[in-house]
Image (cartoon, chains in turn yellow, purple):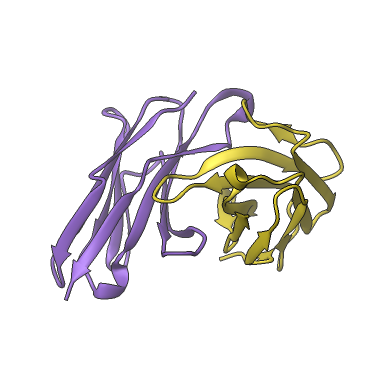
Length: 117
Length: 114
């Protein structure tokens, strides 16, 4: 399947700082990527859809000014958690769609564990 | 929007036995149903998917069945092995403008006992 990478895999930061997470499609171009958030023992919650060359589309209840998304190229989307607080601690996962053999599949990155002290 | 229900939430089986996880969905227009396996601390991995034009798909020890009339689909794992232990998620897309955005079930924690 298609490969999606994320960096960093883990990050620990102090409250009030900003953290940037990168999501890359390694062997394909992705016009659309997705950002999810997952709390322990829970399912994936879609935060936003990242669109190359245009503004991201945020799900209801997700603050766009707090979770800044930039999709500057066909292989890179970034999520910046601004002024992070302990309640932002979570597992953040990106994904990308791949069109293969006439069908679309969604592949996930390995995730980024964010801990805000 | 789409609503996906997944059962059971936890499942323990003896190594070599079969495991079945079931999901129901609400949007009759949904036409794509993937299953993901997530190991601890890792991102979800697509293991199998099925489209609405078929009723069953098999890949070695893993199979998925789909009943569009009843709006449910199931994951079947045969001859389970300890490395099958993980959390499994089903998903279905919604309809309308956000039709490709997947809605996930709450997950099933599968434990395969050696």
